[in-house]
Image (cartoon, rainbow, N blue to C red; front, side):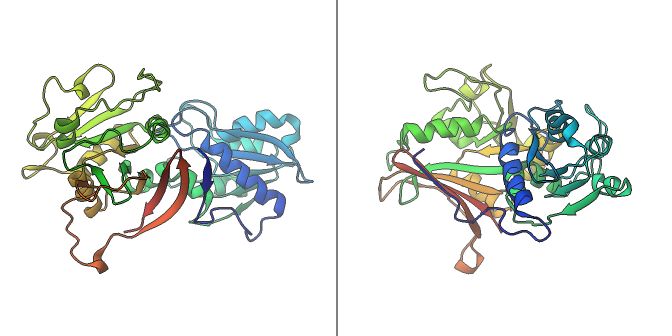
Length: 364
């Protein structure tokens, strides 16, 4: 990657009631939280920084894996006795829930933390309430309350999935400058650069589910696995989901091999008439503990999901190519006038070799 930018200006900026040391600590907590992407699902990414009364960092931590210690507990252990009287800056409300770990709200109280700055309230009812418990114990609590904050963005997958009770969907595609994903003869390997393809496998490694339509399976016979530059499997493999209303996925399709678990979603199981109800699939994935779907094709499935309000963000890799003909990024939309267009906000711009990667949040 040779360049990176955040056109949305997602820094913590000037926050009411937060001093400069606390603002910088919140930015660091967001960076720490991001380190848990891909390893904490189905849990949230969380970062925590502890500041001494003079504003010095005395502890830091992040949630590293599902079932492991939470960010606050890691930061408290890092700080030791210096946690007493400190300020804890946390990207997500400290949990008030006993699961595989104890409640972080109680851990902060027991450590003698004097103040807690909370960037985002926890929307999961079972774990919420940490702010109230802290205040009842005499701990000063300041809520940032910025719905467009970096803390919201870094944890967008878990927050959105929890609020909507369905898996978060990232639509990913590689395309030419004129939005073609394949040439007129059907060839599509390779539109994007090796650098972009390596980043796609990094992204695959951060999700717990990958999804395609049966048309993509029939046309490309993809593996839908996380691999290194030599084609070897790397790390935990996401669940592979094929949206296949009539059940046309061949028995010898590579997506059916033993490299990863696969779900063939047919109308018989997830039916809405003769078609798969993709919303029902996403809800079922959530019920099964899946939180992040990487939608990789094809154009008709992506379009139908976009029209149904089931796409949360779009990541596109744009190669410096022009075709003028061939398969488009989207196909078959119900949108027939400009005023009905789906709106998106550009969140990040990155460069990979000769390609540009754009990340958009879909607003409606």
